[in-house]
Image (cartoon, rainbow, N blue to C red; front, side, top):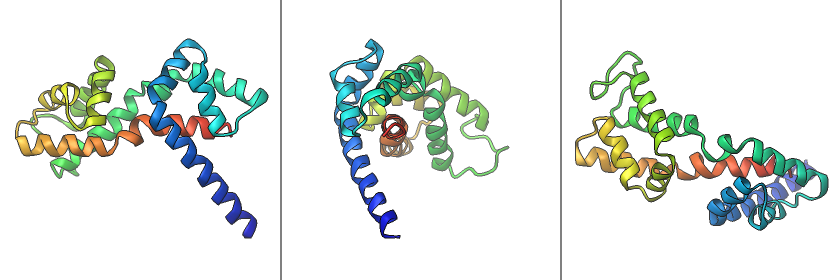
Length: 174
């Protein structure tokens, strides 16, 4: 039991360090992965104490899993569609929201993420901006209070949608 507690404490400390690093250097890590490596990506693996052959495996996995880690349209759609459904209090799958079925709303969000990924990412990070404005318009969210709430709820999910896959990707190799 004591051993397990110590292991959990050490894991939590390492994960916190990795989360802080990814939060601060997300864009630079993404850029390094696009280039096939770099000092910021190395720093991310340093923060998790990933060394030697395991580091090479981790780098290759990051390169091969780039879309999952850094352009995960499905993850964006899963979370933002849930925000949209909760915003209107819709639980029944057959109920239409702003003239859209659940599937149509989900597809609109998927398409927005695919077409404007970076604009949407920045808007979610800030809780406002062109990416969220365009999405809210496509989802027929016309009431200013509902738009504001949609944007703020999206902002609260930034770490979950964009940073968490990278953190997990690093931690899996540590």
